[in-house]
Each structure stands twice: as structure tokens, then as C-alpha cells.
Image (cartoon, rainbow, N blue to C red; front, top):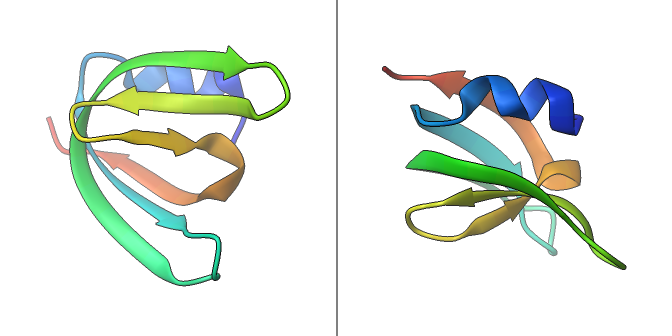
Amino acid sequence: MLIPEARNYLGRDCSITFKDRHGNLHTRTTRVHDVTFVPMYGACLVGDADDIWLDKVTSISAIS
């Protein structure tokens, strides 16, 4: 997922499925507050619970 695609979900509650560093899939429901770029790490979604790196996201869907 790229930053322009992720910006479509700003301010929405989303269900995000992503892989952790071991390759296991996790699904979180969170409100997306920001999409930002962190030097040396890449782009990430800033949500209520935690930050999720965009290169690890496998699917995202808006709940509201």
C-alpha cells in the first residue's frame, strides 16, 4: 500500500490486516489518525492503538 492510497482512510475506523516480523497475520480495528513517513523505516499508519507499517499491511477496509 502506498501513502496516497492510505490517506483515503484518514479519520475512519478501519479493520487492518497486517503481518508481524515473524510473518503471522494480525487484524486490528482502529481509527486512522495520520499517515506519515519515518526516515529509515518507511511509511506508517498512525492509529489509536499503535502504528502499523504500510509495507506490512495486507488488507484494509473502512468500517465507518
